[in-house]
Length: 270
Image 1 (cartoon, helix red, strand yellow):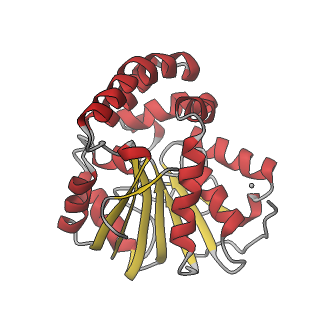
Image 2 (cartoon, rainbow, N blue to C red; image 1 turned 90 degrees about the vertical axis):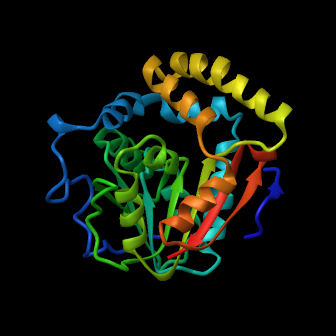
């Protein structure tokens, strides 16, 4: 993927077999922390699952779904046989995988928030691809999969949560690298920093005034959207994310900006 390239901007599904290497839909893998010991970020996402999709659509003016689809199309270009949607949230990336992937592609969606997973599973069953997706409750810092298990891994605006002021950042990145087969493809969408200062200032103002306050109203949790707005405004630039991936051992890291740098699609190889 060429660094710095600009980019301005679902159908029936086939069932698939469950992956024998994962624990199963809606279960907690052995060794995963109990709900009573949930991390602060986990408790935050537990609290916003009901209105999370609505907030995303309104606050991004619908752009997030187009960007997710572009990300999944790039990941599927090499026809992976086994794909992980890491930190799947309410399942948007997993749904795009189910709609667009080949019939023999196994799809696993993992998140640490049980309410988010329950929302994702209900949405998949309602929209059709429920049998196609294996939902797993688990920790990104201790993934319940063998080494080199996946041909591809994707994240939809969740890489920031693993790496923004996260004391377990190195563990999360090491686990992400571990579960990808050698040469496996990591492709994810994430917020970014526009290079043009006036546009960057406008985007940061939007985060502070709109995402923070309108998000709290739409999503019902003021603290959650304060974090989401602040982390987006303070997060790394695309070149810095590329450096982070390279330092974690990923090869060929690159990115493509979306909407002048408001977001980006990143890619790298294990």
